[in-house]
Amino acid sequence: MAEELELIQNAKNGDLDAFNQLVLDYQQQVYNLAYRMMNDNMAADDITQNTFINAYQHLSSFRGGSFRAWLLRIATNQCYDEHRRHKRKPTSPLTPVDPESGEEFDDPVWLTDDAELPEDFVQSRELESAIQRCIDRLQENFKAILILVDVQGLDYKEASSISDTPIGTVRSRLARARERVQECLQGFGELLPAKYRLKGGSKQ
Amino acid sequence: MNLKEKERTLLSAYLDGELSEKDRARVSLKIATSPEAAHYVESLRGMKSLLRLLPQQKVPHNYTLTRLEAQSGRPGWVFNLLRIVSGVTAAALAAVLAFDFLLPFQQVPMASRVAEDMVMETMPAEESAPKSAEVSEPAILNWYPSSPPGYGIGGGGGGGEGVPELPQGAILPDLAMGPGGQIPQPAAGAPEGELLESAEAPLAMEAEESMDAEGQQSGTGPILGVQPKELQGQTVGGEVVVMEIEQVEPQPAREIPYRVIEIALFVVSLAAAVVAIILRRRKRIS
Image (cartoon, rainbow over all chains, first blue to last red; front, side, top):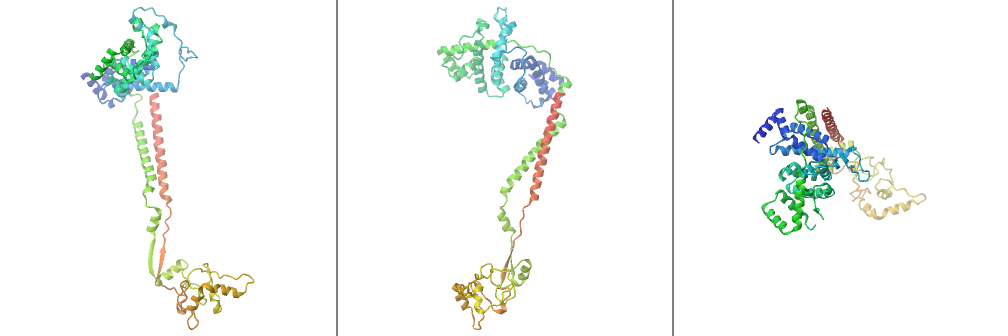
């Protein structure tokens, strides 16, 4: 922690190497947050790059506290901006889309999975895609909280700081987000391993 | 599901260990006594485990910054200057607008201003008479027949160039003049006697009282008093009140600078903002 503070101070004084050390420490978390928020490698790449550039240029505005929360907040805001840009200028997906439902057709490649162990199964793209689809259906605010707490493993206080919302709001948004993802995942029941098969939704 | 939303929120937070001691004890009791609550918590726990098993994506490359990247998109001093200029001029514009629109409500009303500017002077008659004569036609005229055209006592009318001498009995019609100073002319064909009779009615007594022994008119009537000969044709009265009203003209010159300043500030603020945005975008693209 003391080392991190020293790196931050040096970076504030214009030491780019010190800042790059911080980049190496946090790039994984920033990239994963962006990836889960956008569900797109290219977008996550751009957002991560811009997050660190922005962080370096506005380092003087960092007033202490959790540097990780500060970085993830910049990344979250970048994701919101990207979502808005995407809504204004929608792009056509490369995968075929069902004209009736508007959803992408299932990719036969990830429908086939021979893994037997649950852990292997979870590692597969099949389950990951199912979960990611359910996350994508959430509103941005709910999605960010769910990813920060349940995927990234942050506590409520840090999630509150990153999303700039009170802890009570984080708690209620997280509960609702979990319910919605749970309901969504029930539609993929057969794809889930027995251990993780969700019997009986939260709202029945 | 019979669980209320607040209960479900507490159960969700219970999973994460984010409850106070008091709430935790309450929720634990609820889970122990309600199978529905217990089932809800278990299903959430399963889903949470599932989410935590999502694989961490490996970064495609390191995101360390080069000197060039660190400087890219950084706004230069021109951008900062333009931003400050835009902000300051916008604030100045707001101040000028507020001053322009709010100030009239705080000023003294125009009627009061006229009253203040009005100069009321009291001057002796001999001084004021010629002066006032120079300025405008006097307000007091003597309509006695033998007086020279022009000034004297009496009121109403004016503009006549003397009055032709009339027989004494014909004074009464003179008194019957209207306010415009015009002698009413009898209708065509009407006998002269009718006019004299009609004029007699209300003022005849006053006219008789004002006749002195020589048959001259004297004294002062309540409306059109007739002065003795020596006083006729002169301005009478101790003082004449001359009111000079200084015209307060609207001051368009005062409004023009406001508009000019407002427009200039608006243009400068807008131009600085637009140029700053363009510079910023160019920097980002490059």
